[in-house]
Length: 309
Length: 286
Image (cartoon, rainbow over all chains, first blue to last red):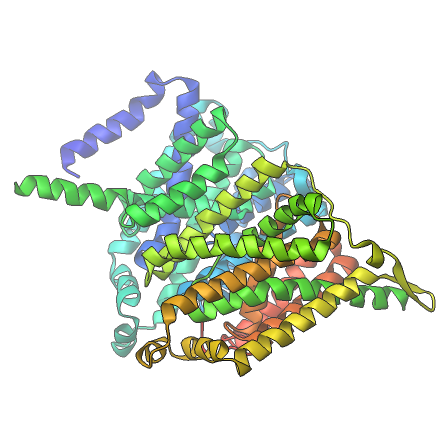
C-alpha cells in the first residue's frame, strides 16, 4: 500500500464515527474485533501452516474468565483483563503442547476436539458459566475515566487495540522469528537441520496467537456485555477460519478483509433469514474449490497482470 | 452396586454407538487421509432419515438399513463430485467436509424442525431385562451386540477378503498399492460409502437411546474425534477399544460429575497424546 493510500485509510477510519450512523459504527467495531481475531489465527494458519479449528477457544476463555471474575469476585476491569489474558495464555500453552504433538490434519483434529471440550463444558458447568443462559450483567471498562458505553467511544477503543495488535503481529511475522516460522511451514526438516527448534517456534507462535485471540475475546465481551457458549462453538471457529482463508492466509491484509466480509455477510443474512449456517457452509465449499488462495492474493495477481499489459 | 452395574451397561451401549460412528471416520482417515468432518452430520442425517422411514416401514432394523443406504449414497456423491476434485489437497478436503456438515445440519433443521424427535425401540425389546433386582433396557444390550457383530464383520472383511487386503495395503503405503495395481480410485469411493453407511445406520440405531435432535452432530463428532485420536488412525481395534474407553469415561463422568464430564474426556486424550502420539493402536502418526 502506498503512503498516500495509508493516510487516506487512517483519515477515513478516524472520521468514520463523525459521518456514520450508530448501526454502522457498531458494525465497524465488530469488524475490528473480527479482524484482530482472524489476524491472530492467521499467524498459525498462514505463516505456520498449522490449521487450527479451535481458535474460538481463546475468545471464549478470555471472555468467560473476565466475566466470571467480574460477576463472582466483583473484581474491577483493570484486574480482570490481565487475569483473563494470563489465564487464557496459560491454557494456550497447555493446548499448544498437546496439539503440537501432531501437525497437519492431526493438529486440526486435536484443536477441534480440545475446543469442543471447552464448548461442552461451557454448556454444562452451569455453576461457573450459567449454562445455556450465558453470563449477562457485564459492563464495559472505562480506561482513564473515559466511558466506552457510546458507540463512537468503543469504536475508537477497539480501533486502537486492533491497530496495535495487528502491528505487533506483523512485527513478529517480519522478524527473524517470523522467517523461522515460515521456514518451519515450508521446510521443517531443513529448519531442524539448520539448528532451529521447529517445535519451539511453533509452540511460541501458538501461545502468541492464543494471547491475541484472548485480546479479541476481551473486546468481544466488552462489546456485547454478554457471553454465551456459542462463542466457543465449532461454528465460531469455522467463521474465523473462513475469514482467514477467504481473505488470503499468509498475508496481513487478507484475514482483515476476509473477516470483514464474513461479518458483514453474517449480519445481513441474519437480519433477513435464519439460514446463516447453510450459507457459511456453502461459502466454505465455494471458496475452497474456486478461490483457494483467497481474495487478497487473487486481487494482487490480477492487478499485477494489469500493470504488465 | 446397582448404580455401577446399570451405568456400566449404559456405557457399553454408548460405546457400541461410538464404534459405529468412529470406525468409519477412522477407516476413511486412515485410507484417504481425509478428516471427514461431515461424519457427525451423517450420523444425524441417518437418524432423521430413520424418523421419516419409520413412518412408512414400521421396523427399526429395516429403517436403519434404508437410512444407511441413503446416507451411503450421499457420501458417495460427496466423495465423487467434490472431494475427488480436491485430491491431494488435504486441507481443502477437510474444509469442504466442514462446510458440507454445516449445510447438512441446517438442511435437517429446515426439514425436521428444531424439536427433538424420539424414535421408539422395537416393541419386543421395550421391556427391560430383570436380573435379581436390576432392571435394564433390553435394547441397549442389543445395541452392544450389533456393535460387536459389526466389529467382527469388519475384522473379517479387513483380514480375510480381497477388498480388505487392498484397504490395508492402501492404509500402509498408498503409492506402492497403486503401483501394484490396486484400483485406488474405486477403493476410495467404496470405503467412503461404507463409512457413511455405518454412520447413517448408527444414527437410526442410536435413535431409541438419544432421539434425533439438532446438535446431535456437534455432540457426537468430538466424541468420535477423541476416539480416533485415542485409538489411532485407520485401526479397527483402536476404534473399538477407544470407543468403549471414551464411553465408560463419558458415562461415569456424566453420572458422577455432570458439570465436568467434558473436562474428564480431556484427560485420557492428554495421556495418550503425550506418550503415544500415534494413538494406542495407530500404525503411523496423524
